[in-house]
Every structure is written in structure tokens, then in C-alpha cells.
Amino acid sequence: MVSPEQSQYQNFSMAKHSARSKTTSFFSDTLLFAGGALVAFLVVWALWSLFSPTPSPTPSFSSTSFSERKSSGLESAAVSPLQSCADGALGFDMVHDPTDPNFYDDRKLSYSIEAPPVKNWDEKRREWLKQHPSFAAGVENRILLVTGSQATPCKNPIGDYLLLKFFKNKVDYCRRHGIDIFYNNVLLQPKMFSFWAKTPSVKAAMLAHPEAEWIWWVDSDAAFTDMDFKLPLDRYKAHNLVIHGWPTLIYEKKSWTSINAGVFLIRNCQWAMDFMDVWASMGPQAPGYDKWGEILSTTFKDKIFPESDDQSGLVYLLLKEKEKWGNKIYVEGEYYFEGYWMEIVGRLDNITERYMEIEKRVRRLRRRHAEKVSESNIPVWEEYLKDAGFGREGWRRPFITHFTGCQPCSGDHNKMYSGQTCFDAMQKALTFADNQVLRNYGFMHPDLLDPSTVNPVPFDYPA
Picture (tube, rainbow, N blue to C red):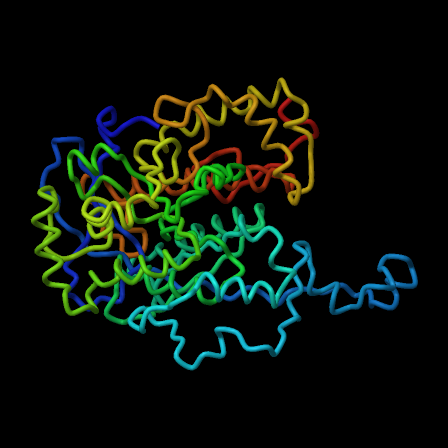
């Protein structure tokens, strides 16, 4: 990916209002954007409020009984109905939970971000996995995606509609790649509103999911725009936290916008437990909150508001405690771990055309297949995309497109662009992603700005 010095959009600022206000809005790391060294003061707009998702409909069940399936040869006699349901596609035994004591039986264990630090977490996870062996295989690559919103309706009349589409987008990506998803719509620490609300959710998710090696926080206003791309976990083997950013801006420019804290991947380990406690100690629930605001404002000369925020706090730990924390943090800048939407959306039509050109030449890539085996084509795509490039000058699908500054729930978008511009861009990106999903179901949207219309996909399309 290109460096921020080469892009007028890459260096952006987060829009965050006073952390004193007791707003119900939270979870989005809303950002204000500025260009390179020409960053000017931008008005800090009200943080956007988000919606709670509608419960899923009651699932349907097969009308064929187990005994009928067994007698017809559809089910092995050695497999019980409970084993069949529990194992599912992933092979997990979800009904086996032995009564042997584990960390869940500790009265002192608390999921709260303010609770005493969790100790010996690596050992406790290992013991739990021994008790639940079906979850042990493949644990090193298992991910839980965490996102969320507020419990009350959006102020923006179309905010709930937009956030539902963002949530659907995340569910689509997770379903295609076998990733579990946790959507939280309550403040787990009432004082940690807005951008600080993610830290209590992530800690609780770590404790609730010892079977997951990675917890992946993704802001509500971020969309997956490459449904095939997978996180290169092998690249992060020696690290415990992955963020998107630019080392030059961190260590030389000392800019609070040198990273984006709206999307991050954190390992479910003792290091991460300790890090979350230190990071959260800068938040509004902590007694040192005001002091941290002063420290961060003094450290980062381009910081445009006085309150302590999560992004500045994370950059501070990278700068000042590199030995303890920074060496285990991977600053990802080689692909769109998350990318600024104004840099991306205008290129989506050209990207679609380039991918279709490849499909016309390669029958394997246009051959119909079940959604469950979508990953089978990834190596083939990579062969043809090796020279596509990941940044502004490339034509590879951007992995995650982040609509920082648009604030779809509150509608209080950055004034450097109109609400209609935000709306059209979100529709286009979400429809672009939806076409990659619907293709497996035999349909596609002919117009990226018209999400309500689909056409059947002809056989051997786009030959």
C-alpha cells in the first residue's frame, strides 16, 4: 500500500466529541480527514449512534427424522443425533462440557474491564482446551469477529437501514470463512462510551471464547469489500496485536493519526489481557483520565481535542513503551487492513471490470460452485492478482473499506463532504461486496447504486 506521504487522503483524523457528554452513541471510531502535513482544524462532530440488530428468524429443521435417515443410509449408525447436530460443519462437540473445574468456576473471575487483572490466562485457556478437545484442532487460526452498536434507534432516519446492511456484510464474510461473530449493543462499562466502548467488549469476548486464538474488532461503519481475501495469519505469528498504520508517522512524525484503531486483530493471550488493562486505564472510567488527556495532547501536537482517546493512547504505547508493547504489535500497511473510503469507492467500477476480464479467460474462476467451497478459488485468483497491487495505484479489491467520518447512524457527517456523497458511497461499496456473495446464489446487482435490483446470472458468466 502506498505511504501517507504519497496520498492526499491516507493521513486522516478521527472525529471525536467531548468525552464528557453522556451520550448513548458509541462504538464507532469516527474520524475527520485531513491531507498530509496540511492538516487543518476540523470541527469535531457528534459521535454517531447505532442500532440493535433484529433477531434472526427461527431456524428451519429437516423434516426427516434421524431414524429415517439412518435406515436410508444417509446417517451412520455410529453417529448419534446429538453428535450430528453438535459437530456440524466444523467438527466441534458443542454438547460436551465436563464438570471438572476450570477458570469459569473461579468466583473472583470477572468479565468487567475494571475487575482485577486476569492472571495465568494462557494456562487457563490450555486447560479448557484439554477439557474440550474438539476445539483444540486448528485453534491457532480460529477467529472471533466482534462488532456492535447502541441499543437505541439511530437519529438518522436511514441509519438503522445502513447499519443493518453493514452488519449483513460482516455476517456474509464470516459465513464464507467459518468465522464466528459477536454483535454487542450494550455498554459493558457505562462510562466507556463512544470509541472507548470497544475495550470492554473485546475483553469479555476473550473470556467468553477461549476456543478463539484471535479477537477481531471491526467498527460498525467498516465493510468487507473483498469477500475472498483472508487475513495472512502466518505473517503475524510473532505478534499479538495487528493494526493498520504507517511506522514513519508513528515514530518520526509522532502523529495521533498514524494508525487507525477502528479495526484491529488481537491474540487471545495473557499479553493481550495485560495490554487491554493498560490501554483501558486511559479511558473515562479511570481516575487518571484527565491526566492522560494532558499527556496525549502534549505528546501529539496534531491532536485536535483535549480528551484522552483510544487511538492516541495506542500510539503512545507504541512510542513510549516499545520494548514492553510495541515489539509485539504489527503495524500493517501492505494491504487495506482497513482503507479510507474516499480513496477506494471511485475505483470500484474499474476493479469490477478488471476481475471480469480475468474470469473471461479462466473458466475455473467463472465455474459455479457451492458457497461453502468458495475458498477453493483463492489460490487461482492469487496467481492472476500477483501484479494487481494493493494500494491506490492498484486494482485489487480492497479488503475492508472504512467509512470514517460518515457517521451513518447519527447523520452528523464530516462537513468536507455531503451526506448524499456518504450515502452513495456506502451503497456502492456494500452492493459491490454483495455481488460477490449473491453470485453463489445465482444473482447479481446490475447497478452498484441500486441495491434493490438483481438479475439472474447466466450459465458460464461472464464468458
